[in-house]
Length: 268
Length: 268
Image 1 (cartoon, each protein chain N blue to C red):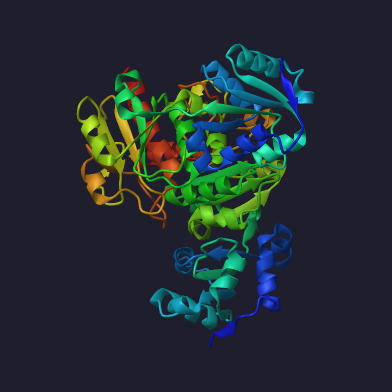
Image 2 (tube, rainbow over the protein chains, first blue to last red):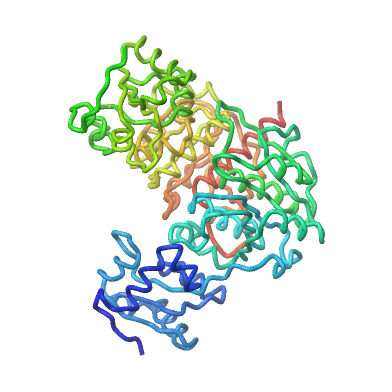
């Protein structure tokens, strides 16, 4: 049976609230995801929160009921609470009526089986949580296996990043690695590393990309370091017809990933 | 000669600060753009700010000098100020060292000459300033003529939207229209209206799109209304291989726009 918490001073409320800070997420190995849609996508992908907070007036919704049952069956805890406390937990003016606390699931590269998917996204020193979340959402759309985070990227489990994934977070594996270790791992198996660059001369639609394809994007302001570009099997350019010299990184990643997917669709 | 303002209480500082609110932007017909890069792109595209604020220690930079001269030659005003005031104007912890105040430039549809570009982006009821800015940035990249904003969209001149354009704002025309008026205008000339939809059965790479192509995207949460989809010459689907049922709207717009560009590149 769900218990009710109505006091802001409740230690669990304070603890969950603290998960909006990266430091506490790291310490606890937990993160927040908000909204019935994302929590339902999570459950369908096999991820059950350890805590679920819901507004009393949402408890009758069948999907909320199913989530509460799943959490309790799984040994987690369901907590009925007020809109004010949901607002405090989410930090949003119009908080979602359901908030889940999940165990974070970053993997070491050695746990990634590249043969499980024809496309993998790779991001280096990404800074913006919205871009990271959007890349995960695109990864889901192209049937990617997951996202490999190189060097110091923004936390994929921040509230903003999770929101931007729109639930796709739970369909994608997330691995972290230093560049040197990634390269060693990459060359132990099949696959093309594909980077986009201003200094590339080959159009992105020219090469025939091998499966699996690893689509690499760099930092928002700096792009990829030269030595990283040099390590790519294909360094290509996306045509730019205007005055600007770059695309948003999540857009560039999506255009590359769809080109790879389109080639794979045509060769089937 | 630039004048110096060091007081937070200066009326001009208060007035420029107020441009972070949509209401004041509308009333004044002005907006803020921050950063040497964006202001330089603006100047190269022929847009000179009516005011430019710069930090004393940045005045020696040749590009800042050129901007100051351009503003003064154009009858505007250059103002040397403190980092604290720049911070107050920009709202950012690490403000740019140059901030410009520009006249906003939304056009009526009747001022748009569709023959000036092979691609036009069209967005309906867009809510997120980052998405709108990213669409403008993508528009520049594909050689679009501009962005047509249908129904109630977020303000393209908000600080967040301008930031997300990375300067591409100044290469793109921006028009606003109600849907009914847009349709009348659209059918007075050449061109295909292209929408993406979950209920479409045709793959987005199947049709041969006419020039100019109008790439239409809908609201982040709702997508396009059914009646808007019905008005499209081509209603197509972008393949989705995962669990999620949609892409980020700026990503979807970019994938469509690059497909149109790629077809045009091949037919040249």
